[in-house]
Length: 107
Image (cartoon, rainbow, N blue to C red; front, side, top):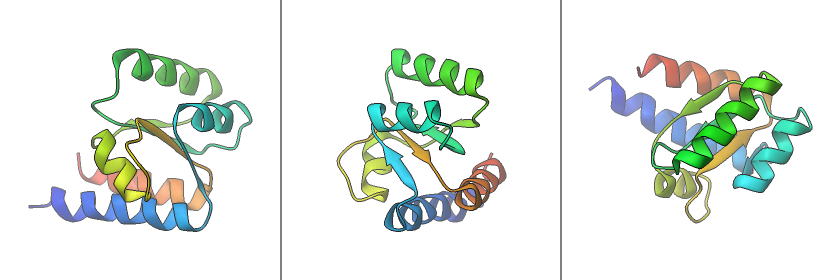
């Protein structure tokens, strides 16, 4: 039962971050945010392609950006008011830290 509240919390925080303009979503925008050192957290959908997972895992490792696997493409997209999204970057440090804390608590 502990997982559900944290999961809902992560998704609602992603929605808040999006509404405040602190989320870059989709492959291109996420890549740009990481390379321009604007990303504080990258979230990759668990059902993203192996290629996508590897690409962003390696990129985040190189640029020292935390990278987490979470939820599925449809749910991530829905949380930020978009279509399916395989990855997104949180560009606000406060939101990123808070979301990451909830992600780690739900493990």
